[in-house]
Image (cartoon, rainbow, N blue to C red; front, side, top):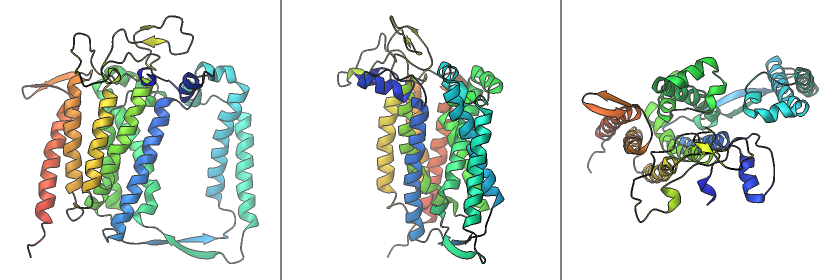
Length: 391
């Protein structure tokens, strides 16, 4: 089955299906699935925030914009900078294609490229922006009121989720894995594409979003309730990226274990041929950039998590309307579900163990216990504080 092997880039998957010979260049599979996860999560979050706005949990707001102001220097510089980066990389790839093919990720995450191409395209894009603004300048700029509800500010949430998610994920993984910390310190940007802890990202993003809510006077519990269910589906999509790329998130070896009769082979033991970690043994006759496979089958835990978390998302999404009257209850239930799922999956994942309070568990399991306790207290508190009077 296709799912039994790994694909470093989307083009590797296309090649295996169509028999083509496209080089293994970006977008890489893991990055593509992560981007798709963000798109799915943000779409559902916006939908839920809009529902809460209509119910009156968030105020309907507007903001003023001016049309026809003339040249806006900040916008000119922004488009110029974007043009520079685009020219640096795109023209750089065309003029140094062999260098790009040798290490696509390293090329894109460095300052390698065509500086003359970057300057040229930056001037073109910045110049065109200035010309267009000058051409449409009005003697009296027109003031318009546009919607500025919380769902219209979803871009802020996306930026917080992306930056906080990646940095938090990397830092918590670096604490658990000294090798990852060394890699992060020596190459901060390049190391952000692997070795990520989902729980670290979740906590960092949560803190940043709560700060954002306080700063913008947004009701905390309806806000986080709106974002909790979408996280589950985004997480499910992201775990598919782990599975399809073979980034090392597989489970324990199945050697010596008895396969349950109801499980198909692909849900029991994967050898992750062509995995991006280049772990295992050499694949005979392989000429691709990624030519390693695991010496023995391992449990495909990313697939298990995708299945379990999708089910949990469906439950939360179904309950969200019924629990709307209890702000904080959905978040509490989310923490309980998330903690339980991660606690049990850790028993069949490869991880480091720590001994605290007489328990020998992984870092994620200790965090999961904390999440379950906090989630239980939050759910009970939300129901008690918002209990509807009996008629």
